Amino acid sequence: MPTRKSSSAFRSPSLRALLMGKEDEFSFEHRVFNLTGAITLLILAAFLIIDILIGADKSVLLLLGLMAIQVVYYILSRKMRKYRSIIVSYVIVVYAGLSANYFFNGGIDGPTLLLFFTTLQLALNISTREKYLLWLILSLIIPGSLLAVELYFPNAITGYYKDPTERIIDRFGCYVLSTIYIFFATSSFKRHITGQQEREEKGAADIADYGIRLRAFFESLTDNFVLLDRNMRVLYFNKAAVDLTTTFYGRKIEENLNIDQFVHASNKESFYHCFNMALSGTAIAREFKRVYATKETWWLSSFNPARNEQGEIIGVTLVMKDITDGYLYKLKIERKNELLEKIAFIQAHELRGPLTSVQSLLGLIKEEYGDMDLIYTQKLEEGLNRLDEKIKEIITLSSGQQEEL
Image (cartoon, rainbow, N blue to C red):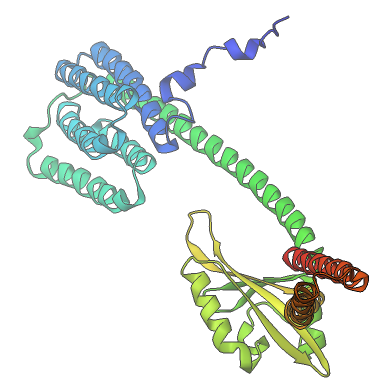
């Protein structure tokens, strides 16, 4: 029977997701830009209503133009995803529109300077850190220039309010709409920061848990494990490495120590070669012998490149395994092989040679005394043949045993 999907699978996206875009499709700054575009359209629409109510005809035309431009930018960002290529031009257009509105909407008596402050926050929210200084300079120079023009050319300002009521409506309306924008922008940042902190805390917990399990794994190893950086400094080691250095070198291995002081002089050249090979990206292993007091110990050292998440080589992992028992067993097998080779040689030459000679002599005797019934020569031939078969059997068995070893 087919399973029934939960209702959440069919849940329509929220209005916020429709306006901003989904988190897995857009970056946070991109989503803030999309949300800002939608809010700006609402703000401009509200300003349009206010200016119509107070009879600011020039501001009405300006706002209609700005709304058309805002729709174009929103489509470029939300639908066509050209967010990064339009940020600078978008902020400049907003500054240009505010500068025109300053002259059409009462100058310093109007609410335009408040909107410059809101625009600065918008620019900081949607752009990279490299642009912050640019926006700060523009937010200081442009309003200062507008105030200077009004001071020296007061006739450039048009659209004065007919009465105090219009001024209060315009200023309070701009204040309310700017507050709404700041509220939405700040809440979005707060939501993003909170979510980021939760993800970081979860990631840190996962890393800590993984580190505990990884450490438990390495601590359980009987082999000596050491992680070195590119300068041969110790970054991590397990208990087996501590026991080895304490027992045979009289000093405990520690983080940030150079591994060089734990490498015997007779092995340093080979050690450096293997370390550099691993740094170049090639894993390598070597066997070597060390004599501790009166005991010979054979080691197998494996050098492997250590990489980060980006695949860059950041160091070398060194694993040392005591192979003394295996090496001695190998020597024992090699000696046994040599012995079998000697046995096979003796069988093939020192035994087969005399036997072949006797068999040849027996053939001559049978030819010379062929008219006589020599029962003894018959018995002797049977014995020589049996001896020849046994020698061949021994050679076969010894050769098979040698191949297995």
